[in-house]
Amino acid sequence: MSNDDGTKVIHMGTPEADAFFENTKRAMAITPAINQLTFDDADEIRALFSELTGRKVDDRFRLIPPFYTAYGLEIRVGHRVFINQNCTLYDLAKISIGDDVMIGPNVSIITECHPVAPSQRRAYVIGKPVVIERNVWIAAGATIIGGVTVGENSVVAAGSVVTKDVPPNTLVGGNPARVIRSIGN
Image (tube, rainbow, N blue to C red; front, side, top):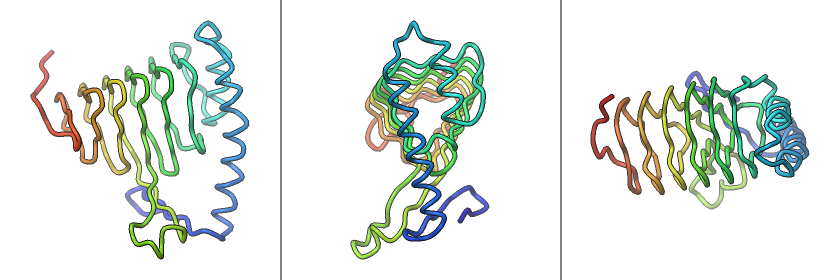
């Protein structure tokens, strides 16, 4: 079930959950194939990533394996995107990555979460979309949480945990991430 803002709620034991798990199996078959490749296998990586997401990526898309995802079909990638090694994109809800985005090593973009109440944790999962706008740099080891938009031209400092929207043209850092300063051209 999806809301107007792109939030998804999947209750366990439903046909929707069964379909999600089937697509997870599909992603788990494709990602090991990507992860056996090297940087020099760029054409094969692009072909497999396109299969994983269900959308063709442009000829300047670059990904350095290993790469991890639980679904793949909700990832949207713009032109000239670079994803460094050991990144995790969990896309129960949509992950939109704009043109010219650079994602450093060990970055996690996680759209899904579970309820906090112990009695509900296994009952359903919630996914909130993530939007990474054009020309963003996400530095090594950062984590972006569902429901966040990272504004155009912004930088997320290494090791940051982004739990709220990042305004355009800003540098954010810390846990939770806060605006450090504005970025000029």
